[in-house]
Length: 301
Image (cartoon, rainbow, N blue to C red; front, top):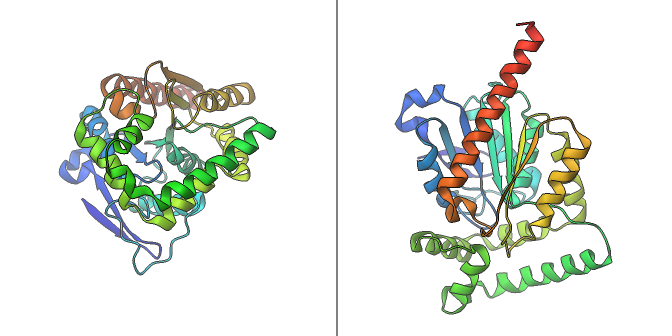
């Protein structure tokens, strides 16, 4: 448990190699959080993967234990990627070809930007529940309506601490039942996150220009990409992630895989921790073998 000070914030992060220095030799996994939530929700997955990987979690500006008081961070995809990039460099991972980046929801956009910036570090990218949408009049109206809902929910967010709205909020996030400790975390993080940051992130996640850039950048990632989605996701329509997968699959020869969970919502890391962990490990191993084979072909081995 450490802090990384920068002009942007005092960034709180956890690196499993701090407790086990031998972990510095293991492949590293950086987890990038979704909207208005701290890194605590990754804990069950971190425990699942701990034997074979160096695991790094952090609280983005405006969430959890990261301190923004006295700083003026910009709440944009580029800004969030800047702070995560400083962490990657602080940990010496930028040129290692030993880093897996896993981004959830809005964090999928940040993970994609990091994958663009650090191609020499990257083994693989995983995007969870962060899709794109067909651009038409109906979608434009839907995004406008969603933007209005974000404004309303931010102004009234404390009501989600009270039943039955609390349960309704959790059910929208997780279709399957999750441990109460983690439903408490989701509510606590949402209601206590920085309002300016949370509002900005909510709007940029549905901005058409941001989504267009995101699509281009996902397609351009040279490393293996895994797109994951719960087909019972009530937070972000699952078809958007499938569409993203299909576009990348059609436009680049770089490896691309799709992982779907039929009865899972927006939080597969909590709803199906064991299975999700197993599938992530398969993806990580595939990526490692992909680069090993590429290296052998390059050297003629």
